[in-house]
Length: 108
Length: 114
Image (cartoon, rainbow over all chains, first blue to last red; front, side, top):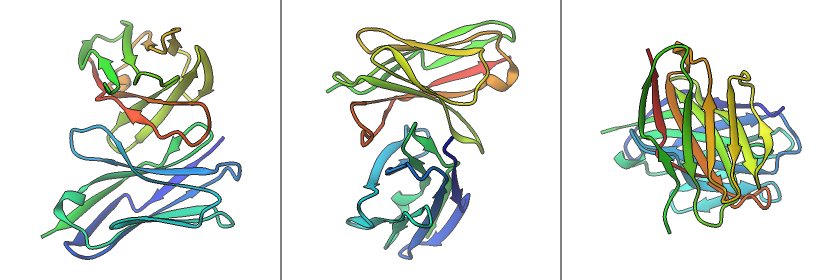
């Protein structure tokens, strides 16, 4: 079955700097890659997603890139702000299997 | 539009007991997935139901089971509870008609097994 690995497990960046979270997947049949953000005590919510026929997608300060050959995809957050502090989960389709999450800390 | 509703929000049970959790999806959503969330283990996939049929299943023991009703509402049952079953159980609904359906999560049921 599908396996999704996510790195790093914890990431601390200075406010205003960029953050990058990387995921790899195992099932080459996967063709949908969403990212979810979970703030403390709240439910996970979709922040951006990408389909396999697209290499990059951007929405304001967040972007996702996909390399199907290498089977990895990344979340990029630019100009980080305090409200970006949360746990981020990547996922792959074919059953929606999630990575273990990255806890992002934005330092003042 | 109402979001995904999970009941109850909190449960305390004793080892060996069984428990049933409920999930009402967003109106029009036909797929319901269940996840177990524990610190350090992320979101572990339990199973997915679509149109009353289990479509996908994760690697959990047979003590974990589920079902979906004709109105898309879903229940999850855990029998013979163990201490390690203490977790936040999240359900998520999606349109389910194809592969590109984002998940909409409920607030979860926090289960504590003593």
